[in-house]
Image 1 (spheres, rainbow, N blue to C red):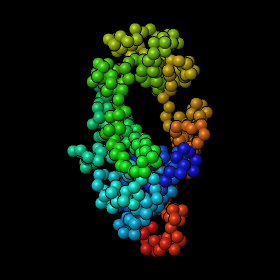
Image 2 (tube, rainbow, N blue to C red):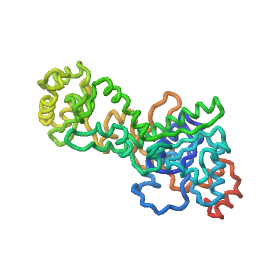
Image 3 (cartoon, one colour):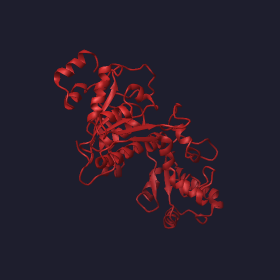
Image 4 (cartoon, rainbow, N blue to C red):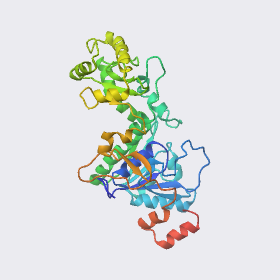
Length: 380
């Protein structure tokens, strides 16, 4: 394995959303991540049919061990793996891992140095801890969803980037790495409780600071960074495509006016913002997106075209940096961030559930006859 986390062993209890995202991040950075899939499906409806195929990008770079977790022998296999691991990741409702026999107490009895990473929407405790929910619900509770969208529409769902992946998966990965570093000194593992409500709230730290300072009000599309400022927004062009303008600093705003020939009021005159917005809307509708790119891209105006997911990998800047990679015919984002010595890489497309069961057990110390017995007993 390549990357700065080479040598770190992780067991991922397969779930949806933030947990596999965190596991992908760790695997991208060189950790050996073993996915524990359930040998038989529960029969519940799966809203994401690409799971278990090469199109399951968040499952990349890991091998899969499929177990019948209702079988006591399978439970022993999991506990034995966790006894040799540095990290376990799980994203179930509070109490599920305990009912399976894999709660923190049972795991730490086998491996006191184990870092136990848990990610949920509401957290491990609190009045809502046992309630079902999804990304949109979690960010709604943080005050952040209320701030997103246009003034005359309900708040707009920001995909599931803020809760699942930013507030959940990335916070889990960060917390786990912190705990692994601490365990190397203390010799003790601990539980990392990553709640998407906590993480999404933390992502809004700057906005909460601006609000306390009196520089952010509660009305959508009326603040500096929510589309209220005419110089920080997206605009439609003559061809129906879009561009973004983010000329926050005075010198960048002055350059915007100079290059576009726009007439505008003083930049921070909030009362003039609606009229300035109308002027910019008319201005940018007068040319195509490519025309505006030719004039503004690469300047200090702070400009970029709005690209779709087919266009983005082909953009010259993204191509030059290798921001996207092709893995088994599937174009996907490359590992991030970059490292000068221990460069991370994608080790391969997602394995089919259970495809690597025997190989994983052999690599983690099981003798061949024990693996054969587990297969014969339909444990793996």
